[in-house]
Image 1 (cartoon, rainbow, N blue to C red):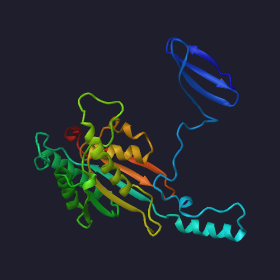
Image 2: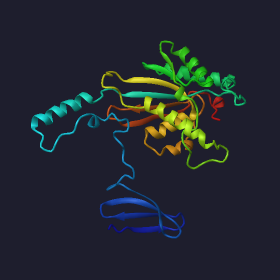
Image 3: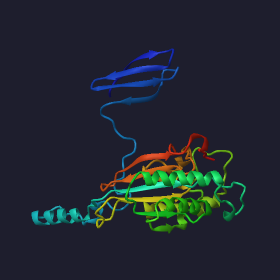
Image 4: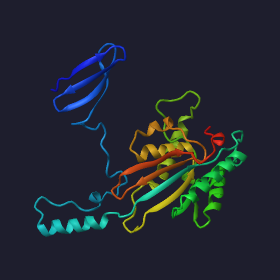
Amino acid sequence: MVVYKHMLNIAKGIGTATATGILGYAVWSREGTVLNASWTTNFEPSVRWEHNWDRRDPESLVKPLKSNSSEKETKNRENELEKQRPMATRHLLLIRHGQYNLDGKEDSERYLTKLGKKQADYCGKRLKEADIEYTKLISSTMTRAVETAAIIHKHLPQLTWEKEPNLCEGAPIPPEPPIGHWKPEQFQFFQDGPRIETAFRKLFHRAEVEQKKDSYEIVVCHANVIRYFVCRALQFPPEAWLRISLDHASITWVTIRPSGRVSIRRLGDSGFIPAKEVTAS
């Protein structure tokens, strides 16, 4: 057992901890118990990355070797693994719709406000100015998402535009911690959760082996959906989705490498919208 020596800073409640081969710090409570610790070596992750999260890890697609496999069989398996390894990177640019009419009761009445249309236009200009060879445009079928996608499409008219009903807004999973002013009925989670998870599995995966060039897909949908997608993609607890806030017409950029590693290049980026025209509710 490693024994830590510490110096307690009573005024700030901060101490330091050292041990053979380990340097770091610890935060101590007034009772002297450790509240948090960090160190630079011998770190054991609390949760390990699931490499086969999209069920496309080459190791899971090729029959394993037997214990007495020959050199030829080993080489053949290595060749099969190589055939299953993607070469391209997929980029998903998740766009939240612009500000919309919150007084609307039906979806058709929840159209973009004048400001929401301006926000969508700013987003379309930003995407065009990035000078990226986008692959396609996908949107939810809800009015505010369709209107946002239509404005973006004017800036990128060469893109094919697909509408995906599974991307519609909803309650993906009961959030933790819960909040008092938003309490959907349990049946909403049972209805919306599987649908939104279906959208995630359809969109989020490493590239097909046949894909030779990196792809960039623009996906226009909703805050709850995007926040859930981010948690799922990064393998964070999915019930943490409500801890993230996204501005209207913001860009969240997710990158999926051929290895299956996932990273976030942008999260709710709205810096291209003038400060006085940024909204989130």
